[in-house]
Image (cartoon, rainbow, N blue to C red):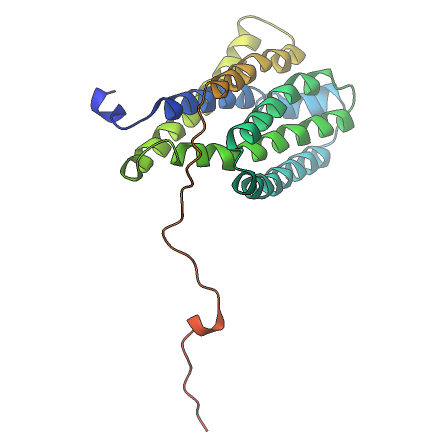
Length: 216
């Protein structure tokens, strides 16, 4: 990658991009094995698999909205993001320890709760760590780390299962390692207390709508 691409990217952005890389490796390691683990090991039906995934995604969306509001009000974006990274990492071995689909259901909700909690404050940390002209590049760099992790995670899981011949539960335990690595990366992020203000606001008042002509 050309060195010029990194011009304007701060240390915070690089650390958060690395954190996204390891977080997605941790998460995506489980996606190839999670449905198999639920149905063949824990005896769950296909409808239960869908229920768990749907509730998990809803939890992530709700948590993301709440954490974004809290991080704006409390100005503690790093702390809130760290909580999210830690919860997501902790949930991985808890899934592997589950002996029923209900136990895995709770751990999966914890995973998505952590993911939703960290997203908004992480983005705010990125935005406040670079000049306005470099924000697109900063978010693109973080997204590249995220996508690289999503690519490498399933490959790593496939390698461990097919070549190393480890048990399926061990995948959940090993996913803790990249998850905690991501948490450690965020520990070194320096929080900027400056507020990034929005340049525009969406008007929702009735006065924003055009007046329709009246026909008698």
